[in-house]
Image 1 (cartoon, rainbow, N blue to C red):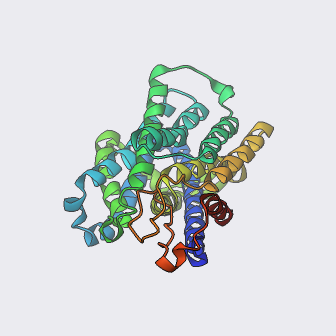
Image 2: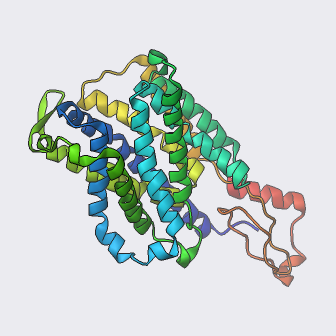
Image 3: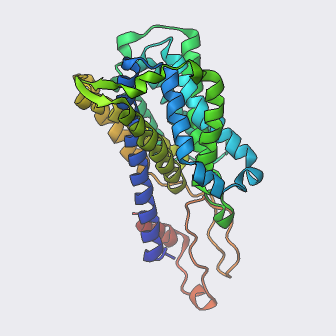
Length: 360
């Protein structure tokens, strides 16, 4: 029996909202580098910029953490994992990789995360993965290689590549942990609470690593230069904290809950494209033809991945009204047929054609 139009409309609107949130998150994350680079050029250490970013966001989200103060007792492992992996781990490993290998190589290795997410979903969670999602990952990875112009600096450094791979694994943790509890109904942990405590935990870890007491604090009272234009350093820091961290994490986690880790991971590859375009517009860093072509390929890969639907693994409800068998998370079960409808039930082939027509 075809799924009612209202249910299909709800699914489409939910997916559209998830895609919009994922794009906003990619845009917010992508703008972090453009604001951070003038601060680094003004005299701040990159790791100190990361500490300011995470600690400032943690302070902004502190009232949310107080409101959800029961969350650490309910989900301590989730909060610890989010703080260590999704916040501190990604930032620390990425900047450690930048100290040893070129930026393009580090970005490419880090954004192998969508492929690793697919592997996690397929082989660890043993859930089916659509061909469209896999194709989107391949296209996004290939296009990303062109965006970062990986061939421009292929210096092999085993430790640097290991740090970059660590950043990719931590980013997998970000997408997987963001999806935890999304289908638990009223028992699901509040995503804002998870982000708030994750930022607090990440700030504590980065305080030990970055040692902010050695930071050049007077830089924040001076003016930084963005492609020759003077900008107050504190304004750049406010952008990094409020937009590139708080807004980016909130929209990112909400998008994963509405889409899926594998689809949201591919859409997140747009962050590198956005960062490159913003650097072109605001910092005067020119784009080459391969970078433009690579950005188009990344967009194509993201579009193919987000248009994919989960593969159904369960069976339809019995005609007698029994409970349905196990099914994929995003599969909407059709209402059970009544005794009056049993005589008019279509054949197996007709049901398959009807299901295909509904999906189309």
